[in-house]
Image (tube, rainbow, N blue to C red):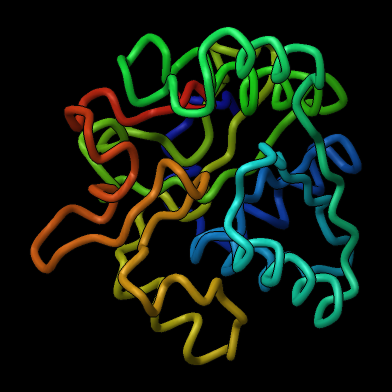
Length: 229
């Protein structure tokens, strides 16, 4: 079976998570920012006989509510969260040279900030793995409409990228959370469907795209930080 096989599209999220551990063992990890999708995956992972490891990127500019839900994961599920931080010297140089909000001045500046605070730590995390799991879904925005459930990660070869919830709708996510009493970030109830750094995330207005609150000053086609291309 190749990793481009359409057979993966027929598997449920739970089946893909089980397959992930069977195929990669301790060398697969969930990249979690503790949004609704990631919390669904964490709840599923906690129910596996061999839970998949969980890691996160602490950019230094997260919401307090995000740290609170991290602690709820630790206390409810008893799962370890491996945290990666950006390089201290790189962050200090960025802030000294360009200030605290350079990312709002241009797409290039914003991508520079994301590269330092997110991409470099992610690369370190992925350097310890053979495959990684994400909560990406096809209906999250124009940059994600064609993502596959399992794919060779061309940005991080030879890793395999696994998106168990690729074909889930927002309604399915919310239904799973309600049925299974999954803890979620308190900001979701304040119209934050997608949550990143505090300075780069706002609540969405009725009728807006679910990622409209991320880097809201940019055009939709630019709204990726470099973790997913």
